[in-house]
Length: 271
Image 1 (cartoon, rainbow, N blue to C red):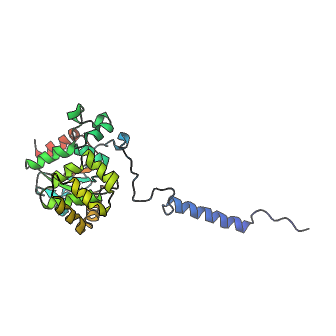
Image 2: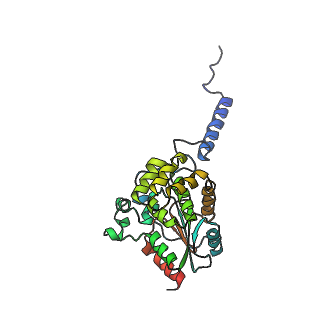
Image 3: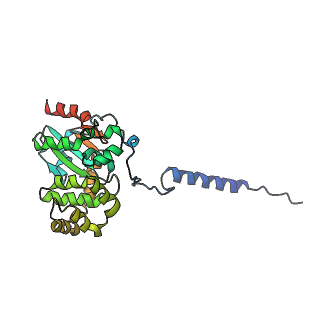
């Protein structure tokens, strides 16, 4: 009588085992993506989670001051001179909730993020860093560069609007309006990087910038490639998330309270 064959022959078992190992390597190596999340994307949440943005301790020099000055020089939006005692780099995305929190123009979002982010003007202890750093620039004490990188996924049209505004010396006016509660909703709920909605951006910015000029600038596509150039600059100094700051060579990743940045500022300025 013919002897019954095993369920798997030795050769078949070897082949099956090799296949399982190969699949495991593919998954662990990132070649097979499971679920909806893919490389280079970030989940978009309607509201920020404070626990996810607890700023870590400031990082000591990972780059040189020459590198910071080089990024400043190559940035599209900048104020002051590279040889200033304090050179500030902000990497941001106008659709990012914690960039709004750091900008201090969307107090409702600051409150929603929790007590530690509630603005001083609303009875909290949070001093939004961006307005404080802007003051230093206005007073001639610091240089400042604003650089885009995607931190929430919907900031491309808003960023290009800021590039356009910068041409006419209106960066801060447009920045502050986009960083308001209405600006946040506009970018994240209506425009969402849709180039056909340039008119909506232009109309929203009408109080501070001519709508016809803004729409023409956005429709021209002149800054489409600048988005990636900015992202590359950010990566060159080790920032891939938003907001991220450098004060000379000290890195602050996250929406820091300006109170935590102030010692670094004073040390750089010698005060």
